[in-house]
Image 1: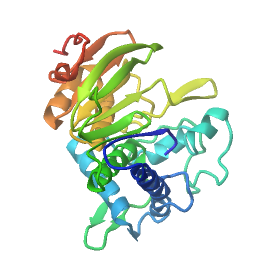
Image 2: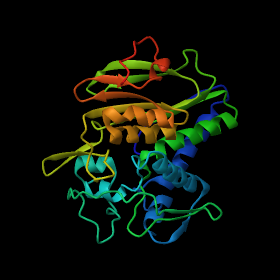
Image 3: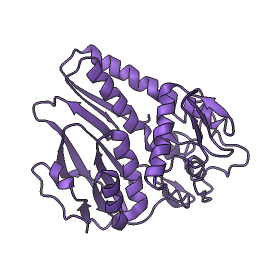
Length: 315
């Protein structure tokens, strides 16, 4: 999934680590938009036609469409062609190095050239058809599905549930900072440090979790330049442009990692003023860091803080 994976297992046996790794690899093979043989690549290549998916991939699309509806479109998995247009049409390692993708971008002939900067508002999920009986998805013509805003979180949820089912008494799966923990914790508990997006050597807070998901999104990590202009992967689905509303980082705690992940995107689109209302409505707790250095937290976030004073609550 283009990131590091860290596993913590309490109880059980060492073989569970191999079980978890194989499951993560399996989900990566199904969900990566940068693999020609993945189910998501096949789905995107068959827009306008019903495509049968595995149970895992149907669950991914189903959750993503539900999240689009729940966030009133602030989280939108149909930003794929906007991402490609902005230059993110291959793995980020290749984008950062300025290398073309080995197999091309996968765009149709009518798509703008990668890096053209042409704004492409996301079409939204309103016309996406889900058939639970056949486990089939139909994307409208010209619509692409991007799993990047939900896949790591959902994978963490799936693997934690698997580890507990296979005999672990507690488990934590961290995929590039999006994670899920449940069950019996280590001796010090399930603790997560929140780093300063402006200073990698500074820790802003430590949170203690039980059965929760946590995710962080930042405009300062996946960045690249096109013709002297800096772009990043967090797009405003209304315009297709990289977001620039003063927020630099958002961390969300929620009951599941996939929920936390989509809520970080929804909070970014809502902006620092409206993000608390989004969290209150959807059951997340957010910690926001603005470009100015101002740090705020939504009501309820302070309940998770360990040994660190809570920042002032928004509003």
